[in-house]
Length: 130
Picture (cartoon, rainbow, N blue to C red):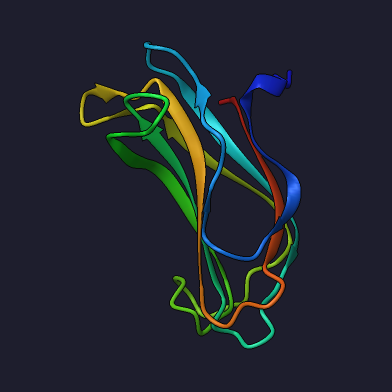
């Protein structure tokens, strides 16, 4: 089952570091999967790096926030773990809105981009039940 209220990012291009729109997941602990569907990724020079974080916040302004889970994709010389260029496709990361005993009722996607990036990465992201 797919809940449109749990969309972190609609399909589209990201070419610079950006924060997504926050969504409220509630005061209770959730266990979910962050599903990332990458349809295009620029790795022309090999040093492009894209880090996608699920960020938890204590309020809708993310006054106090922390990474709840992340994935790195990019070129093989970008500093990502391993020595193979990332491919397009689906990535699923187990996540929770609890970290260190603290529940974060708001979450958003943060994309951090580094390297020689021209076009960037095209993807969508959402939360799904584990």
